[in-house]
Image 1 (cartoon, rainbow, N blue to C red):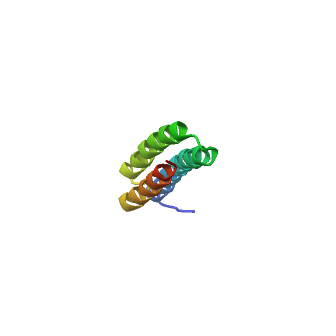
Image 2: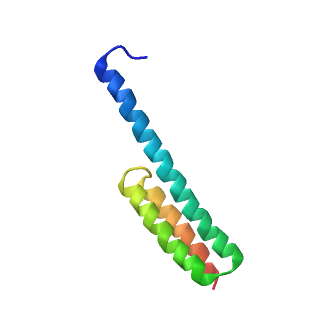
Length: 87
């Protein structure tokens, strides 16, 4: 454990940010999973709606620096391709 006050504060701040990032990553994974579940069920409308919400959450996570912008772009591209392949 750190002895210096500023180092102790940094540890607390980093723990807070880590928890926030974990929560947002978990939320993104849930939305991505919903897209794949809609694709497996064969419901094109539900898949489109799930894709829209997942894209929004991915972009939000990317803008906050939780995911790299190229990672966000790749994930959105793969989801879109999977939904478009349904037709």
